[in-house]
Length: 604
Image (cartoon, rainbow, N blue to C red):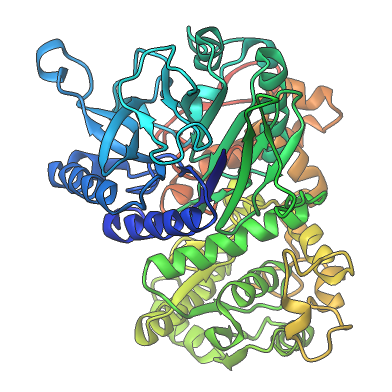
């Protein structure tokens, strides 16, 4: 029996458009003689729909479209489609009004509805806000075509056993992530995969919308392999792909057989339709010879690059933008963002704006222009010296008797931010802000200045990783699989990021001779402290025990706490790590708790 796995890129709320994508995949699957089509979690509305779920007409539109889709499917093809359904007992018995569900469609009708059992409420997930958990193991019976060639079909509301039928288990995303043997603990009191193994299903399907973070696919596959061998059960994992706001879904749908071997993997960061076969004789899933297993990248730099390109491309496309504008400073952050935008949107759709001040070095202007030439993008140069003088004149009396300081530095940044926003507004461009995670963490950025933008493309990428990705871009190891820039630039053998950008000391150039390390520790030290504090939740004492200077540790922790008000006003941050400054970061602004070495202290 052939099974089709549709790795789809839905647009949230585009119910009709998403249904057409499912239908197109269904026709293609049917043309390849597939009997069962699988789609990701909430494939009809896109994940995550968030508070759209509070609109009754949104839920009703899904119900109507689902019924129409069931009638439009090719004959002899069954499909699992992710959808939101009503909880009819919520008003009488209490509980949440909705279910996160999957519908089994066949023979022109909705045959069964399955409800997600484990509802994540951590990091970016908030499903308990909307959904009631399902209470029963989810499974259905499917008669393979070989036993009923005239009417191969799913059996609605089936009870075991049905002669010549396959018993198919259904789980939804988080349902897979509670194996106490794999994790060493349980987060929920049930394990849906174990329940299905006890029922005796032939194989289990997991329909997911699992966001990307660096290195996550290897973890997923290790978890799948463990479940397959522990329960002697083949598993099919179907993941959403695409960018939805700050979240990036990497695809990487994968199939493992009973022995825990990967026999099929869909592409990363791209839609795909792949097929596997269930062998009735061996009672196992098997690869089809014509379907190649998509490779996994060994490079986290390559993974993050692929994710960011997809995130920028889909954010622009789904928000109605075709062009982007970027402030080019001659520094490494704007260089990386410009490269990402060029890959995502095309050379003709990216504008780099140089805004030199009297403090800008000649090499910064030269480096920015060289970068633009390498990428093949247009530039505009708008000197800001006269604008700075205008501010000085306006504020001269009020600022009399004070010294040049951070206020005047920030004015330069805000002048640039205003110019970029004006260009974005005038020409309908998406302004990409260029700040990295290290700067965002400690507040080394300016509200209404360099933080301006519609999307913070690299604000989840630490400074040291920014350098690493740029070096990867310049190396011969970046393949067309993830990066096509080398084939686009005028001299494919040349570097993409000018070498001087990678070797000079980083600087905001807001005063003479300024470098970042005037205010911050070296970035390798800073990023290690931040990783321990933000990702690993280490105390300052633990960070000091790892070899860091107590004074630096206390300074960094103070800066992180004090910068919360800035982060709250930042553009959406594309998430590529397990702890990003986005919807999963929930820190108070008005707080007097500040971690410190030796003993807790309040902020002075």
